[in-house]
Structure formats: C-alpha cells, structure tokens
Image (cartoon, rainbow, N blue to C red; front, side, top):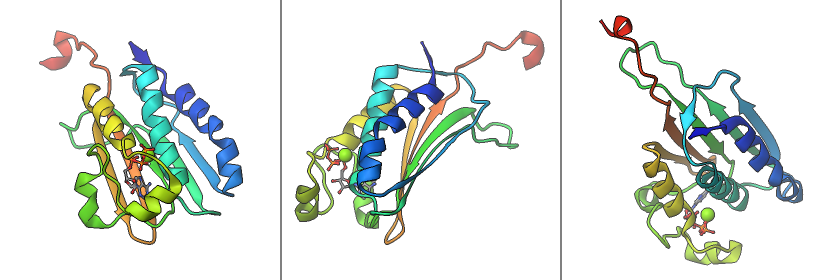
Length: 168
Ligand code: ATP
Ligand code: MG
C-alpha cells in the first residue's frame, strides 16, 4: 500500500518535541516536496522512525542539532534506481568504526556502561534493519567520532509499469 512519508515523518518528529526541548536540541527538518511514491507499512515505518529518533536523542549532544531529511536522491547516472532516503543525523559522540558492522545485531550495545546509563535493550536497530529489509530497502550507518552519527534508510520507489513505447 502507498506510504505517505511526509506526514508520517512530520508527525513522528513532532512527537519528539518535548524530548528535544528537554535536551536543548535544535531540529532541522527537510522534506522534499516531490518525493516518488513508496510502498510500505505505515506502522512499521513509524517504528523505524521512532527507533532512529530515539537513538539520535539518546546518544545526541545536548544543545546540538538533530537533522532529519526525506529526499529523493537525483542521479544522472542511468541505472541507479529511484527511491527515497530518510536520514537522521545527530551530533553525538559517534560510534567507533569497529562496532559499525555489529550494530544491527540483537542486544548489541557499544559501550555497556554508558549504554546502561541511558537505557535500552539493544533491539532498536535490529528491528529497524528487519523492517527495512522487508521493504527491500537499505540501511546505512555512518559515524564520525566526536562529530556524530547519520543513519539513512533508503526505500525503493514504487515500480511504475512502463509502457512498451518507453522501453524500446
Ligand atoms: P533500544 O533501541 O532497544 O532501546 P539501544 O538504543 O541500546 O536500545 P539500538 O538502537 O539497537 O539499541 O542501538 C545499538 C547500540 O548502537 C546502542 O546501544 C548504542 O551503543 C549504539 N548507537 C545507536 N545509535 C547511535 C547513535 N545515534 N549514536 C551513537 N551510538 C549509537
Ligand atoms: Mg535504540
């Protein structure tokens, strides 16, 4: 079924407003107006957003910026598939490179002491990965120590049956 990403993201981000205020985190929200149609489950995608926003606030920096963008990356290179990228970026401490490949394992947490202090079970990104896979999307986690972390979810654009005249 068609997924209305713009209202879903706006609504989810708005629900985090109290936590952002509490941590004095500024929000930078960018939603492109001309997104291609994406198919998916709204409840599951809400769960993805909730987990990514929760991490970005939990592990973000007080007084920092939380950036959320929903964009349709343009490529002039022919075979690149159309899709939508939802990116959530924080300005937290970052994740050491050696941990990146294991973050989506269930119960995996980077810094056991510090993570216990902020709370959580280590299931969030495992669930995110599972849902993104079910939508035939891709999950990309980028992090720079001392700079922050960006988690991006790429979702494929809904396939439009092309007319034969378009394909010859
Ligand atoms: P849960 O999501 O179940 O409440 P959690 O947040 O610890 O618990 P995940 O969301 O799966 O679990 O994240 C796994 C680990 O990856 C976290 O414990 C944390 O160490 C690290 N991590 C995740 N997101 C970030 C981030 N934005 N910045 C820094 N570290 C992160
Ligand atoms: Mg989490």
